[in-house]
Amino acid sequence: MGTETRDMGEAAGSAGGFGNQHSSEAVAGALPLGRNSPQRAPLGLYAEQLSGTAFTEPRATNRRSWLYRIRPSAAHPPFLRIGNGELRGAPFAEREPDPNRMRWDPLPEPPAGTDFVAGLWTLGGNGDARGRTGMAVHLYRANAPMTDRVFGNADGELLIVPERGTLLVHTEFGPLRAGPGHMVLIPRGVRFRVELPDGAARGYVCENYGEPFELPELGPIGANGLAAARDFLVPAAAYEEAAGPVEVINKFGGSLWAARYDHSPLDVVAWHGNHVPYLYDLRRFNVIGSVSFDHPDPSIFTVLTAPGADFVVFAPRWLVGEDTFRPPYFHRNVMSEYMGLIEGAYDAKAEGFVPGGGSLHNMMSAHGPDRETFQRAGAAELKPQKIDDGLAIMFETRWPLTLTEQAWSTPSRQRAYDEVWEGLNSHFPS
Ligand SMILES: O=C(O)Cc1cc(O)ccc1O
Ligand SMILES: [Fe+2]
Image: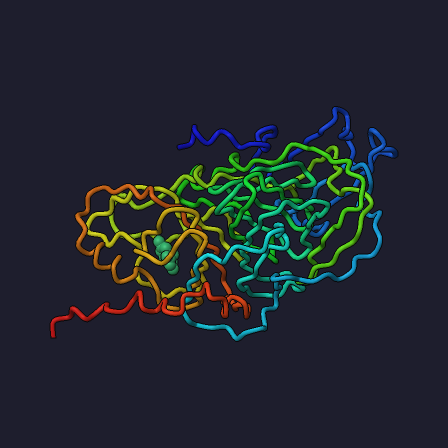
């Protein structure tokens, strides 16, 4: 691993580093030097600030970028409401919060002509987009490129985790190419258009309404480990001059609005700042684990953290624990856990948890290894074992997740999920 993942496609042109101040210009001299707003910006471009945090946010957490564009974003007619499709927003009130364990198979293929935005399907969430709290879990399945359509989300940032098919994400900051095993982080408000080089794609999206994702503290781990800041790549500036009309879709307060621009809003020739999209290869994650005994809590697998959501990856790793039940333990957790599978299998579930599917173990719901996993792990010979047949992810959140009506009623939901814990009988000698 590591060395063979050098090919990061379009992102490779530019340096990275999570949280850094980045800059990029598609045409030399497009970026003003020493000031953000010269009387006349270079090359006749329009200067525009995109603020991801309040102007007065403390320096360490302040996020903003300056964009130098061919036309100002402000040149547009009114936004009008369009249909939300299968997208839902917080607050989630279609159903009551439900303490039951849930699991889903992959959703059926969408109709032909479904692009990334039309293919967004909301599973559930918490908080309130208007109060900028909480998060939502969406799935996407797409089989058509976004042509003459550009999307931006005023409600929060989007953490996109492809499970199948490559996404060529043309952002205002330039293109990012992400496939299975990668994640893309699109900050609040940043506009983008998704093309599908493989013809079709599907995956998971965590929408974070609250304060943005950050790298977790490392504490006693030290100065290195987990996801390295430098492995988060940013795009190199690239611009489109497509003459309109371009439908610019804005998700605002949970609903979709659209305005017909007479030009592509992906017309940024240069930019600088720290409110930028990132691409990260999950296989670059430096996995920390126990080298003595016991199964550590999965917080050591945290890639990115925010007050309302954590993003966790279960990447290939060695298990060496002595006198240890090695798979995830039985537990009840104050946090709510939505899990997805990118490939292979997950070590807590012998079967039924499949790539493209998902599971939800809500606040305090009892879960853990299924019967087969429990029996197998209790009898296993404890020699060093490489877990390298899977890549799973988790969106963990401090508030319970409430399902959408469609997440409850879809035939993809496994009605008999509870049965995986049946037959865990008493072995207590009485
Ligand atoms: O439920 C799960 O599979 C996720 C999980 C993994 C783990 O290693 C420990 C606790 C936990 O919630
Ligand atoms: Fe769990």
